[in-house]
Amino acid sequence: MTYKSSVGVRGEELAVQYLVKSGYSVRARNFRVSHDEFDIIAEDEKYIVFVEVKTRAQTETNKRYGRPCMAVNYRKQQKLIRAAEEYLRRYKPGKQPRIDIIEVYLPSIRENTPIDISRLLPLDIRHLRNAVHK
Image (cartoon, rainbow, N blue to C red; front, top):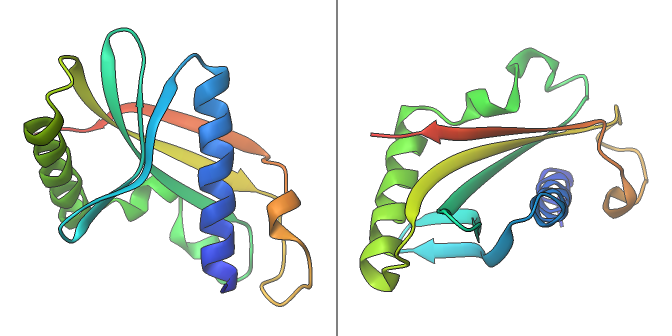
């Protein structure tokens, strides 16, 4: 697994833990519809929540990219909306839909440092509710 995919997987694991602690039930992970995908689908009593997780570990190469949510550009937002609409058509969950972004911030590491990324603890987790909408 590459450095980038390891960081992403760790971020998703931490986001799932965060959601469960916050009272959500996780319905699916890496839900794929055609070419579109959601990292996590969760729900609470009122909402079915489609979650895009963006993770950053501070490295020299990614300092210039800004907040993780900035990676969810217009094109990515349209893909998320399409995937959510397809999920709702297929499964009819009967709850209000919402698309959220969870930003996971990991400690500063170097990309070639031999460390077990799966053991990293987050510096911060930010939950941006209703971050993507039509």
